[in-house]
Image (tube, rainbow over all chains, first blue to last red; front, side, top):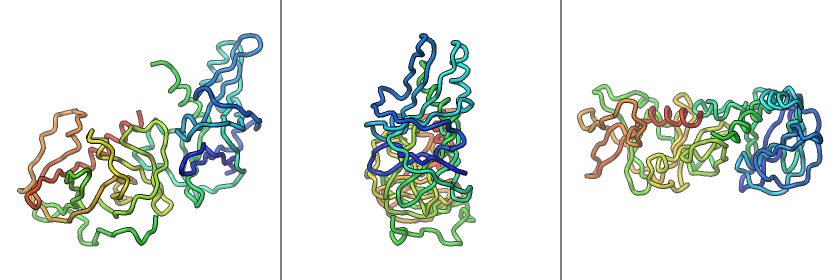
Length: 156
Length: 164
């Protein structure tokens, strides 16, 4: 399976995120700082616009300039899609990262499952882990990641 | 992590509780308190190298460690018991067949056989989530008390709280 490999942030040990290429509509240049883990933008007509998800904030991987946006195909966020549809507009879901390092293929055999005690609802968006000399890559299900981040942001 | 730093603690013959109902325990310290784990559950003790944080984990789970390219969940028993963070010195790694989990510890002191009659069982409250729930029993070693940790309860609690 082919992934975009992105740095999650700048910490003492490198953490990377693997986003399935098939879930991505396009990459964009962002070039800003995150003002929160989830940032909703209003559309020109005042209705729901794009939603930005700061991955370094969510993964506790430091802050700083977020240079790239990964625009997800809309089917990859059922919750956000439904919510935006209810407001009469369907915005895009955009994952913000400091850098997109490369595109790479990883076979199932190269990716380890999470330890059983972490496989519950909290980490359901992590589909696997791979270690190499550069650090750890977390493979992500963008649909579940977006839903989890929206749930975390929602007031209790 | 250098693999040569690892200490194999398990012999092939020590994989089940003692026939007399006792158990072989690994005794170790965390912040000068003595704890014990059944040694049959332990794969190795290794020097701490690095931990990779994950989101949404409880404070006593600092993240993931890399053991021979396989991810293990790291648990800080000091924080779990409300006694402060454990120094990042060594990790006690469970056998993969038990669970891919590891525990921060300070130092290994000994391995001892403890007969069933020497264990002082700790009463557990039904359904309780108290910190003491993860201590199964205590026993005496060199005139000091050793708290025998209930690995099963720790893992159950970690799974419950990491998934919430």
